Image (cartoon, rainbow, N blue to C red; front, side):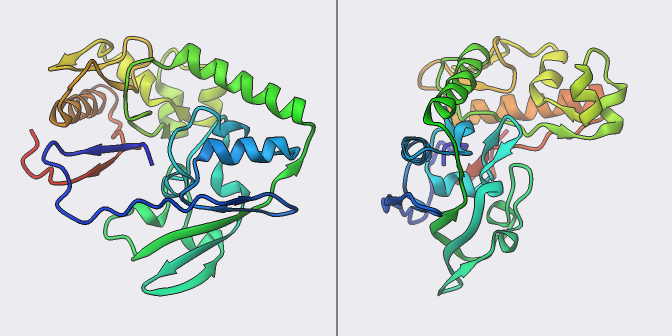
Length: 257
């Protein structure tokens, strides 16, 4: 995963790194959860299988993508799954995607007090397509990302978009298609609060995209956390909306400001 903000003191626990990264492409793709998400896209594309074009530009492993149901451009990894191989409470078994309760940028794996699950391998159903079409679509997505997202180091999109049709219809200036879909981008709300460029220490809210909290170099996690909390506070006061982090906090944050 890459949507992680680790406390400055680190993590007082054993951290296991999954380096199992085998990918087998066939009628049903099989991929171990330690593989890089973009590598899975590339191997599928080379075999003429589409559906993972949105994965271009999303860093991290397949396992990390599963935890938060990674996606973009109205697609997500959960939509492609047919089964997941896990160790659940000490027992290895194959589970249906429904058992992991995937939702928008969410799954049972990132809820408070999640069940003891280790992700091992996935089975995915991909659609045959012309490799040229797959690469063209992926390049288009990548161009959009480059034009909209800042080049500075960050933990990716910090907050989830707000899904609320009633709120969308009362916010001025929102694009018509987003208003009708009931989607309010978190970056739109943060920008509307005048927070682009706000800095604390060496952490700052990107002037290019307000949902990216960036690092100028040696920024403290506590300063990124402060910016996030300030963004939540201002959006709540201005719009009556509670922003929900897409980022996962690791470590001891009990003394965070």
